[in-house]
Structures are given as C-alpha cells and as structure tokens.
Image (cartoon, rainbow over all chains, first blue to last red; front, side, top):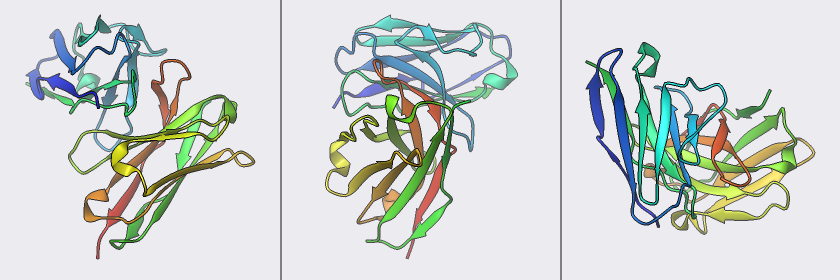
Length: 107
Length: 119
C-alpha cells in the first residue's frame, strides 16, 4: 500500500496568513493526488484534484502543487471559513489511501 | 444537482452485520463509480473500497476482504455497503462518495452514517 504522510499534523494561524500543508507519498504517484477540506461533523469537500486542478466553486486562494512523491496545498490568505482539517489522498493505485490529516486552527 | 443521501444511524452488536444505503440523484447513475470511506471517532479518513456502477465490479482494501460487500440497485439509483463480523473498532461514520472516472477523485459525498458497535 502507498503511505501518505502529511505535515504538520496541526498548525495555528491567523486570518490573512499564508498557509502551506505538505503531503508525501511513499512511492511515486505522478500527479494522482487530491486535497479535501473537512469541517467538524461534515463530509469532506473536494478542493484540488490531479495535484493542482481547482475543483469548481473552490476559491482561488487555494492552490496545489507537486508531482511524484511531494505535494503541497497552499492557502494564500487564510479566511475564517478555512479553519478545518485538510486531507490528502492518492488515487494512483488501490487502496486509495489518505494522509492522516492536518488541522488548521485559529491562533 | 448531484446528491448522495445515506441511510440513518445504526447500532449493532459485535459479530453482527450492517448495511448502509446511499441514494444517488442528479447524474447518470451508471456513468460513475462510488467509493465508501469511513472515519473512526477523532481519526482520519480510511478508504474501504469502490464499485463500478456500470458493471458492478468492485475493488476492496485488503483489510476488509471477506467481510465487505458492495452492491447497487440501478432501478432506484441506490448503492449499498454491507460490513459483516462487526468489531468494536468498526465504530465510525461511513461515507459514500462519487468517484470521477479517470482520476478517481471523490467529488460528491453523502452526509455520512454513524455505525456504532456496542454490546
């Protein structure tokens, strides 16, 4: 199975900050990497697919980059509604594994 | 608009089975596959498996082999996930999520179904 490791596990940031979350795969997944946002008690929401493609309706302050084994999700200017947990997922090969999640909290 | 509506919460005893439904609407049911993902309390997301809605083929994570079944009813556009031989650590919220055909990203999700395993 491909292991997905996110860092950090949590972070504290202020509104307006630029935030970057990284995700590393245990082997190359080319660009089969997706990012989801999840708020407490809710289902995840797709933000980014294919490493860097923005899902329809997602604000442009979210961006993704990377290929191979190293990926990142960047929020250019953190907004109050962005405080949530972020998950990466590889869909290169089954089982389609997730990272452990990164919780973004208010500083 | 695309919607996935799941069945309600369940409480089951260890060793029992649970069947969760996921009714799809707003898209051509057989054109896209569906994954099931679970989340134990306070934990991350765990992909369980996927069903091809065109032909019913399935692909399961190894850890669920032998006790996981995924089926569908095309007449009602409903997917089903059945997990057997339940253990306490199967307590989780179970999500269905539509999978894009080529990249397999999960673009629409059900609201989740809490399954509690308790004696």
